[in-house]
Length: 370
Image (cartoon, rainbow, N blue to C red; front, side):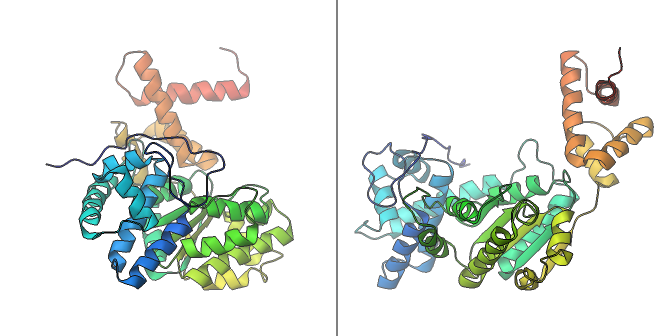
């Protein structure tokens, strides 16, 4: 039975990588930009050298190599190709029938994607995951903006990162909205997600154009912590960021997911500048509002991932108190701490260990003496 290829020869990318051109040395970082590869494959399709499906394979291979910081030789090991063949495929200089090497890339892709459906250690497919997965899939398939709102620590970011991981090889572009973000910095953040260099020599307007050429209708742009643009920046920068997101959507036809806390929902729909943001909001067809805390089924599933029965009695009271104050993320962290405590004591994990951690943290917070 074939196994998925390993990810070999990771290299640290240089701080200011070249924009385009051949890469000297098989162990060098792949110094190509996302829009350059996109344009190259479009040109090959126009000339009849490859089909549209084959062009997508080259883009997938490029995105996979860049995402995993592979050298040309490392990418060649994954795709069962020589480093020089990988380079010539990415730069459109192969000069022979593309069917052979692209068949190998297609086989590697099948294996990688089969492995990507496995649950990562530590990732639990809760009801929040199922709803976010469905929302992101709708945004991608229907080419529309989707808005996701919910309290912090409910699992939004974890689920969005998991969706991006499962669809990251040329499909999903994940961007975390920086706090106190300027317009230029947001454009750079999107550019980095598209593998476009962000050196000081690159003008912001040029970067915007390159982003528009690196994204198309088969892509999904995920902007997490979207509320940061509404509550931590000035009105001008906030408007510029909103309009740039709308511009990306209008020009490329890509799917877009905007995720925020409930504060973001309030500011976008009923805030002082809601009317200005209305053009972006009206383009959205789905608005997903997540529950304030995990339900019984999720609590049971999370506990089961630690080989524990569902919490009951005073343990359930402690969990419910924790969920009201801090959310699902804290529940998992306490279970992890309880697991560590049980390991240190060489004992099987039980809810008593959870209670010990819970009581210990409350004593620490209150300043109580032992």
